[in-house]
Length: 163
Image (cartoon, rainbow, N blue to C red; front, side, top):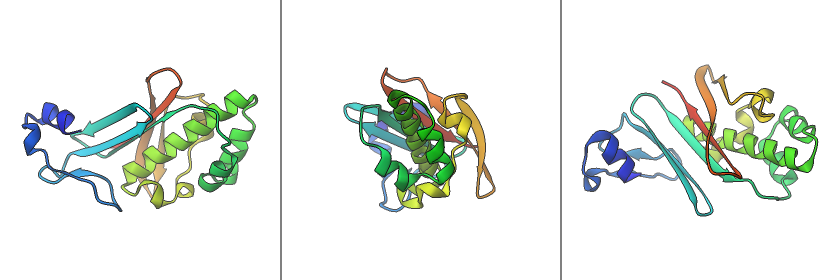
């Protein structure tokens, strides 16, 4: 992240003072107007920076897991029905990871991370199902967009952004 910030701002990496509080989003202490976010999944990592507006990202490797307990923790009934109705196990798994990544990116965008309550943000059906790759939504009267990012095969990456 320091390298990305240095490249985009012209600063030396030694002058990029990252702050990663437990209860809010990471920031750059000496550059408070820049929004940053990152995610890791196994050996893969994703970092994002915005000079205008807020951002949040999430990256997940799609791997077979028993996702039903996690789905019940993060999703409202309509989202659960959407994932369960996706057909094959592979399709349901893909929808689950799109939903999970979108929620995590949105909660990072909001500045709370998963502690902010995954059920407090609703991901549209068309996004969960993969019918759209980008969609605008509102969270507490604030406009935000979510977009899937091209990544390595077998991964889902989502960017939430505004501004």
